[in-house]
Length: 150
Image (cartoon, rainbow, N blue to C red; front, top):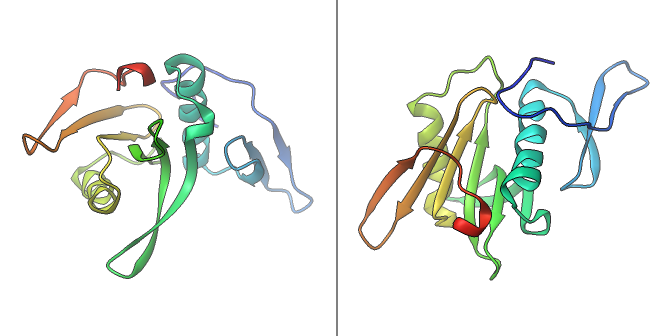
């Protein structure tokens, strides 16, 4: 897999009988296909937990939601201590450029979840945005804050 703009971690990776690679997802506690996007997800989640103090117990991967009667899945959702959505994270494979379309996708999810932070990453570039619902505004942050600063 390609080197990312994230620290290196030791992941449980194995080859299936069919010859494809899988990686153990600690949040879902199961083996999942090791795609380029999944490589980004696993690194980013580990970085949030190990370096940014995000509690794994308040994080979920592939979180289902319904938007206008259509089932969707957020790549990662982080809850606050009350269990309400605090952060939504959307991942792309490293070879995929982050575009306005990517932000449109995460904003659509946020119309349902109403999280205060949106993060988009392709493993090379990371964007974090704070939503201020009282002022009806948003601000891009220079870096992803630690969980205690959210």
